[in-house]
Image (cartoon, rainbow, N blue to C red; front, side, top):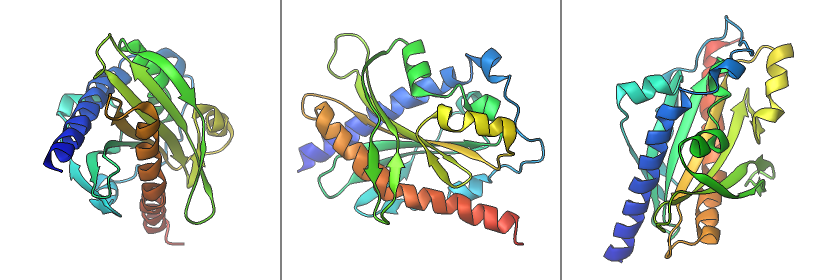
Length: 235
């Protein structure tokens, strides 16, 4: 049992480390294209305090914040963020959670795993776009991508991600970028659930881990933004 927990923790640390390094790259490239999309100047950013309310205990998942260096935070172009590792007591392993929130679409559009991981030396080896069932009968549209770098088995990760745009779950940028042009957007958040792929955690197991956490946490994440919007606009 202690060995399994140690493996889970090492997997979470590895996945978080990969994510942290790539966050720096998120703010460095593809801005020329992203700059064509302007967000409304009167949008009010979601407060960091609002995201901090996401519970550290989500079902059987116990979380721990992972502080980021100020330079990394600046490079992510976010107004508020969460960077945590969650470990399941129910045998589902460990995941890393990254939430990036902002009101400037031009800054958030380049922050996509398929762009930033490959731009940092990873190879996209597999991709799927599942609709994950939620407990309330809805679905969570998302992308799940497997990346590999080098020949070491430990350099493989699965990244499941989706967007939350004014209360609506979106699979990727294509589903909301045109809305930015025609409709003022109050907030955009990208949610990433990252887990390591290894000999003891093959890709299909990593996918089950990420999907289980994503579906359990998604309603709680959405509620944070809904509550923040309600407080900002009490009418």
